[in-house]
Length: 173
Image 1 (spheres, helix red, strand yellow):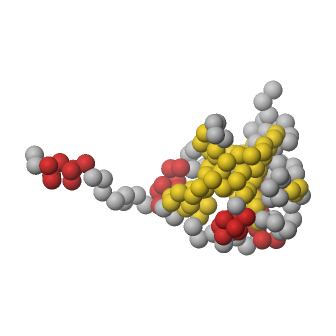
Image 2: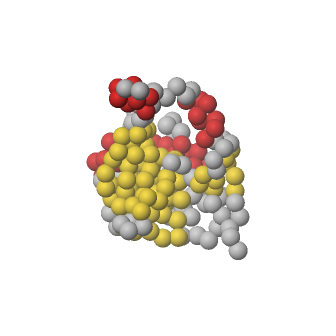
């Protein structure tokens, strides 16, 4: 086999997966639900389930924000954000921040974090972050945040999302 042919065999072809099929399969992965918040003066927030811990040392997490999100420039301008992990009783709040039609007018009880970004006062837990870097992620931007403050605020069960439905898990005993 020639070198040219071997190299072409190893090169992956562009993905031909239907986005709706991908969404359907990924819906079988249970996730927690967060609202990421930023802004100064006015709370800007988005419901996000694309959140994960990246590194313990240094303390890094990531969230994914759609490239077309009108809120993305505010996150970039502020340079900091809070990941608010939602409790089981916060489905309505989650839905409000998920809809592009209602998230601009959500009235949520917040307090300023150490960077000044709003932290949801009654979230299950939060991580306040400075934007460390961004990575291209196709139709999303992967935002890596350096965790600078965090706390558990309630000892209750989390809000979860599985197969396009919200679920409530009991708090661990």
